[in-house]
Length: 166
Length: 166
DNA sequence: TATTGTTATACTCTATAACTATA
DNA sequence: TATAGTTATAGAGTATAACAATA
Image 1 (cartoon, chains in turn purple, red, yellow, green):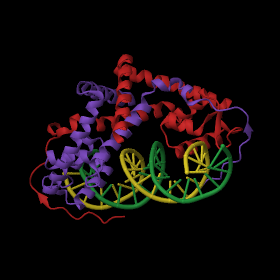
Image 2 (cartoon, helix red, strand yellow; image 1 turned 90 degrees about the vertical axis):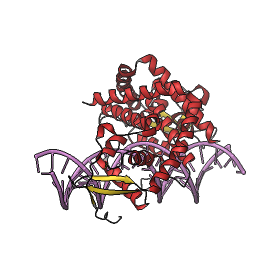
Image 3 (tube, chains in turn purple, cyan, red, yellow; image 1 turned 120 degrees about the vertical axis):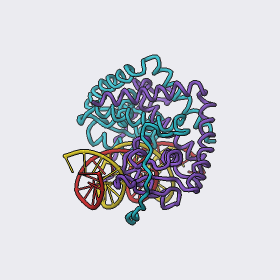
Image 4 (tube, chains in turn orange, blue, red, brown; image 1 turned 45 degrees about the vertical axis):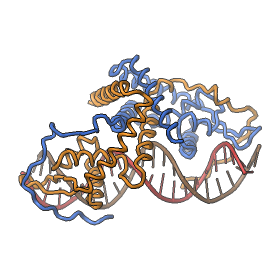
């Protein structure tokens, strides 16, 4: 890898106490809280799902397939906000697990239509039950009404940042 | 890697139209919006920083060092919500770039105290100027008052999810 | 024994680019 | 030319585990 760090010189002063650290502009910095909240929400859902279910990220995709028979991979990518390459990998894995099947559309043989199997529907139902508990835990923390505002703010933020790209 | 996917059988039906996709519980699913908002916020800040500055994740660490001379690596890890191994790597890189220096504390020679160089202070100031514009763009979208509520909600969520771990 | 920091390693999520096949 | 999907590859960010030095 890289070279070991060089030895440090010794200085007499002491570090600042943790309680009095100056965070500067970081108190206003949304990005940091957003990152940590995302990580904690992901980890909480993953904990509740346990080892018998899919990973959190796959719940979105499987739910879309269960609710929308013959949904295409492009549609899944757009609706789940994921790149098509990630969708391909997720669907391949789910097909290997027997959770979904895919069919070519007769009228346009480029598109792959995805359909959940019975095992896939059962898996989605099990995961959704855990998702409901996960959301209830969030509601206990922030309140159901506040959650609606919260989601609206997230959506507004996403839309504005995307508009700013162009 | 893995084997190529097998050929698909052809089915006559058509995919659902994208506009009428059924998202099921996903409309309530905070995690997905959280992920996308985080990604967009990160990307927006990265765009504004350009190629001459550090990556967004390093801004937090450099800001802590600039504002708190002799801050230790453990303190940086806790304050920036990052694992110590990531802090080590970030600081090594910043030291290579001449943005910070590190010293051993005389009274406890395990601890490494971090101090920003003049170049580091200038870099932090340049990045903070871009961070302010980034935050202003967010305020245009969600409003400064709503941002305060938003951060409070994020903090509450983080605290609740962490409490639920134990 | 516990803590600070380092190193090696690996995992997750995501994206880019080049490709095949279909349109 | 453009679109749907696949593959190989790579990157950013994060974490785990074993370790050395120090307390």
